[in-house]
Structure formats: structure tokens, C-alpha cells
Amino acid sequence: MHDFLKSLIEKNGPLDVGQFMALALGHPQFGYYMKQDPFGAHGDFTTAPEISQMFGEMVAAWILDVWQQMGAPELTLLECGPGRGTLMADIMRSLKNVPDFHGKTNIHLMEMSPVLKAMQGGILAAYEPQWHANFETVPSDRPVIVIANEFLDALPVRQLVKAKSGWDERVVALSGDEFVFKTRNLPFDISVAAKAGDIFEISPARSLFSTDIVEKMKDCGGGAALLIDYGHVESGVGDTLQALKKHEYVSPLKDVGDADITTHVDFFAAKQAAENAGGKVSGPVEQGEFLKKLGIGHRAETLKIKATDAQKFDIEKALQRLTDSSQMGSLFKVMGITYGQNLSLAGF
Ligand code: SAH
Image (cartoon, rainbow, N blue to C red; front, side, top):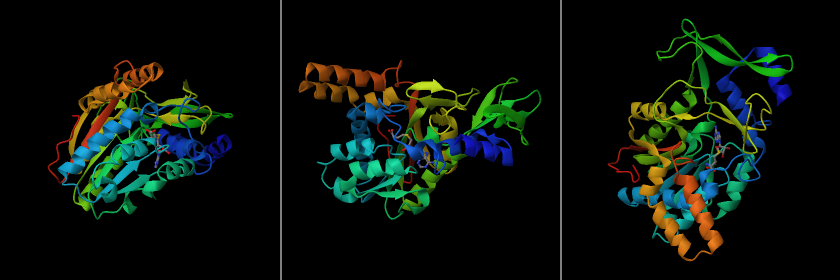
């Protein structure tokens, strides 16, 4: 990856942070997600569905409620960025006794990583999932429910830097053999309150994703979406670009392609994009609040009844991790989108 990026910059000049992120994560040969399974204790980071089945069970309860409000139709259930497939497997397992749900639901997955597609294909084989690179090929013949956990944070972001007058853009350039951040003039202006040196992050890719969801719901005659990620409810200045390797923060410019690179999600921007496209937005609310409203506390108590002491400890630990403000409970936000049907989303 290093040599590839180096020669690309030598040939074409510095990359904006969005171009850099897209290549670092998604280059067909060297991209981070294209090469490996990044999850779990032995990987680089752990996500909510990998922490506990309770997370998938709450999302399943949310889906069931929406589906029943829709009138229990034939359904497209689409997950974007399914990782190991754990969330979808937990959802389908918890809804297996719901009359008609399995029979009426087709599973669709939007995924770019061949390694993760293979894992998803294994764990979800019984449901015969279909894969997509984007929304275009997702069927439009029935209502759609879209779920995405920690997907938005992986979509590319550009970083604008307040200059003395106007704005610059942060770019990745070369200094000898090393990658370094530099700035170059931004040929357009934005109106954001900031002082010199402040960074403001914009993500056309994330806004487009929200828009695409609503457009797909329109084509499908209605639908609902649940987006879960770490981020903020209000737009604001701040550099949130981060890289994780083996559960430690590392420089985003080192080990490119071998560390996960993300930024926090600007949910205000995501909400605006969905609303501009005609969608109705619920939230965003904090993940802890969302999961508690869906009954994760009761679920933990039920699981504990038949558990050993060691298992009870693990259930309690997972519950804290998912819901506590000091852990994932507040940093992670949940946003719902609906279109076309008069749906009232649980958990908000
Ligand atoms: N939802 C999973 C995985 C989150 S990691 C979980 O919670 O465990 C991000 C996921 O999105 C990975 O599966 C990654 O391969 C996928 N991904 C990232 N960018 C993508 C893109 N542009 N198109 C399709 N999939 C993408």
C-alpha cells in the first residue's frame, strides 16, 4: 500500500482526506477491509453485535415492530456493511418463531470486502443472501428495511481547515518516504463559525448514503432504516479522524491499509440529507437510551436466569458496555428514517 500511495501522490499530487480514506479502506488489493477480518479481541476493534447477542435481539425487536406496522408484507431486509454477519444472524435467529417472518423476508447485504462476504456467506447460508455494491441492484418490488451498524463511519470524509481568510483543505502529501498532512487552498467557501486552524469535516459520501436510502424507499413504496454509529448530534468543528490497530489508536498516516481509519459521524448532516430527500427522521438518540427503551435490561435479566455465575458476570458486563454513558451508551447514536408509510419507530 505504501508504495502504491507514494507513486500515486508523486504522479497526481496530494490526496484529499476523503480520497485517502477511500483508498486506505477500500483499495481492491491493499485496502484495509479488502484483506482481512478486522473484528474481535484478536483483531483491531470490536463492534456492538460482536460484544453481545442482546444487541441483535434489540434490533430484531425494532424490525419486528416496523414490519408489523407495515402489515407484515413480503420484505427486503438490507444490511449495509454487515462485517462478520453476526448482527443479521442474531436478528434472524431471534425472529425464527415469528409466523411468516422468515418466509416473507429476503436478505440483502451491501458489502465490498471479499473476506467479509465469505464470512457472511457462511454464517447466513440458510437465508441465501444476495450481495450488492450499491443501492441500484437492490430489488424495489417490496418495502425495504435498512440497517447499518458502524457503516457510516467508514465512508470517506474531507477535512476543511479554517485559514486566516476563507478555508483550506487538509491533504495527504509526501515528505521523503513519509506521508504528511498539508493544506491547500479550497476553491469554495463554507459558512461555519470557526477560528484559524479549526477543522470542519464534510462527507458527501455519507450524505449521499442517506439520500440513497430515501430514494430506495421511494422506489420500494415505503420503508424504514436504522443507522447506528459513533458521532455527534450537532455539526461542529473538530478533527475526529482516527486509526485503530489492535485496539490502540495509531497515526492515520502510518501502516496505511493495516489500520482501520474512520471519523465520527455528523448525524446532523445525515439527518439533513435524509430530510432533503423527503424522508422522515427519528432521533438521533443515544444508543444506551435506544437499547433501554427496547428492553435490553429485561432481556439481560431473562438471560441471567439460566446462566452460570461466570455467564451472569459476562451478561452484566456486556450490558454496561453497550448502554453505559462512560462506554458505548452515549458516544454511539441511533437514527431512524422512514418514508411513505405512517410508521412510528420504537426506541426514539
Ligand atoms: N456492521 C458490522 C461491521 C462494521 S465495520 C458490525 O457492526 O460488526 C464496516 C463494514 O462496512 C465492513 O463490513 C466493511 O467491509 C463494510 N464497508 C465499509 N465501507 C464500505 C463501502 N464503501 N461499501 C460496502 N461496504 C463497506
